[in-house]
Image (cartoon, rainbow, N blue to C red):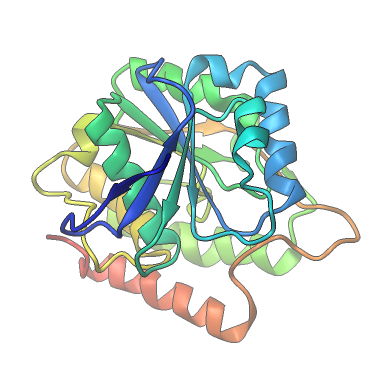
Length: 265
């Protein structure tokens, strides 16, 4: 039976279906909504790479209706816990839900990855290694030695390289190369720092990703990048929630708001 979490300031109401006890110092949060076969394939890749033995996999569902969140199927694919958002908000709210649960459960490091099977989930050990070395923010990058950018749409490649990464790097006073990539690791010390405060209602969509990209090094915490692969499917629609002129305009607004320090507590 699902456990309800309600009325926590800065956190949407959500339910918890825990299939296993906490088994690791690290967890992998995967925000998803109606990812269908893509998330199931990603979970199967994680099992094949023994990722579910290195960290607890926690799905942060925004309210999927496609049948992919069937509990027995998730448990069979190595999922530790399913969180289902009941309150308002989009990706930022799903991540706040996941971060709240992970901190309450006592994890020392929190990883995040998209649930559309574009990223090399097999690279999880690289993030854990850096967390154990004392890094507070670990950014996955397809653009550094060892990384791979496969079938990246032309417009997206140049938007990241010429606009998003330079602006985020300017705000962070630290050079990052792949700043739209949600494949990351965060230390508990970073997320609980009194001048960070990620559990705030201002983070509805992509604001939290932009904010957490810049805040660590602003506070003198340790950050680095690790190589990952991000592969877009060939001859298929691009799996993304950022679509059209409005989606890209909103992303730019968030980017420059982070540069101005709008999200700082």
